[in-house]
Image (cartoon, rainbow, N blue to C red; front, side, top):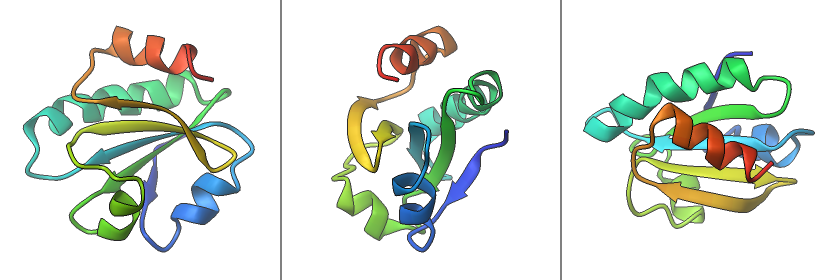
Length: 106
């Protein structure tokens, strides 16, 4: 499974109606730590494809979705279950830390 590009228009369809937990990476092109986390999120999407869905949301283009979740800093990683946020992590993580964050919240 590949990473889903989330937008204000498709967010509810992709996240709220997902039958699996969804990890959403809130990021921006100018954000250095986001660029470090991006490839890790993509690896996780492949390795955990049977357990979670992974999406990335560019906060500059999709400000409504970011504002709805009160995302103030990036990168922010949120895990949604049935459309509700069940876990959040702000800041860059290593792959091991991201895997532990996912495993403890799905």
